[in-house]
Image (tube, rainbow, N blue to C red; front, side, top):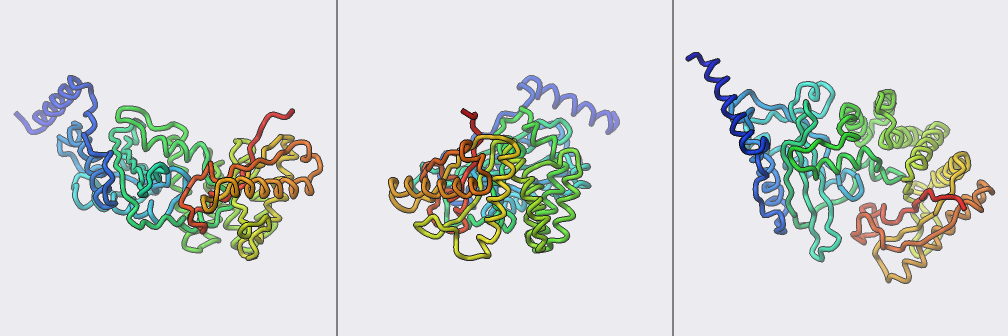
Length: 395
C-alpha cells in the first residue's frame, strides 16, 4: 500500500470517528471558575484552546503547520486595547508559538490573512461583582475558510497589579470606540465551537487588518502615515466603522489640521447618532461642571459640542444627555454631580442650536453604569466620566 493511499485512509478514518462523536471535539474540561494568578490563567486558557484542536483530523494527520493570525485582543467592557490586553495577547501568542509546534503565528495583515487557516481573537473583562479584582479571559479560534469557531476557552485571572491603561489611540479617543463590528468581535470570543463567528465582525476582518496597521502607526506617533492608512481603510467596502472615522479625526487633530479634524469629528458624531451609540469623554475639574482646565485635554471640547449640536439638528433627533461619574464618592453625591454635568452639556448644545431646547433632556446616572469601574479617576477609567447622547422618540 502506497504512502498516499495510507494517508487518505487515515483521513477517512478520522472523519468517521469525528462523525460518530458528533463531528466536533467536545470542549476540554477546565477549572475556569477558579480565580488564578494571571500567568496561570493565561496558560490554562491557551492550553484548553489548543487541546480542543488536537482531535481534529487535520491536526491528527500531522500536516504542515497551521497558520494563525491574531486580531488584537480587546477589553470586552470598553472595546479598548490596553496594556493588559496587549500582555494577554503576547503571552497567548508566545505559548502557542513556543509550546505547540503545529502553529505558525503570522502577522495580522492582508497577506497573512490570505494564507492563514485560523483567526485567533481574545478578550478580557473585569468582573464588577468581584471584590478582589478578577478578569474573565475568553479566547476563540475561528476557521477562516468556513467562518466557524473551532475552539473556545475561558479562564478567570486575578488582577495582580495589571496595567489597564488604554493604548495611545484609545487614550486620546474622544468617544467610546465601540460599534456593531467591535461588539461582534467580543461575541465571537464567547461563541461555542461548531457555531459561526459573528458575521458582522467576521465579514470585515480584511478591513480589520488595515485598521490594526493604521492604529499601530498612530500609537507610535507616525500621524501622517496613520492618516493615510485610515483613509485607505475607509475606501474599502466595509470601511465605514467607528474606529476608522475616529482614527481620521485623531490623526488630523494631531497634525494640527483643525478644519479637517472638525469635519472628521462631524462624521464620528453622525455615525454615532445613526447607530444610537455616542459616548463622549468630556472631563471636568473635580467636583465641578467646569471643563478640565488643561487646554491640552479640553482644547477640542468647543469643537465637539458644536458638531454634536449641528449633527443632532441636521438629523432632527431627540436626545437624552446622560451624565456619568466614576465610583469615587457617595452615591447621592455622584447622582447629583452627573446630572449637573449633563445639564451643563445640554445648555451648551442649546446655545449652538436653539431647536435642541425642545429636543433634549438631561439625566444623571452617577456611577451606576460604569464601564471600567476602577474608581482610579485617571486615564484608566476616563470612560466612566463620559456624557452619552441617546436617541429617543420625539414627543
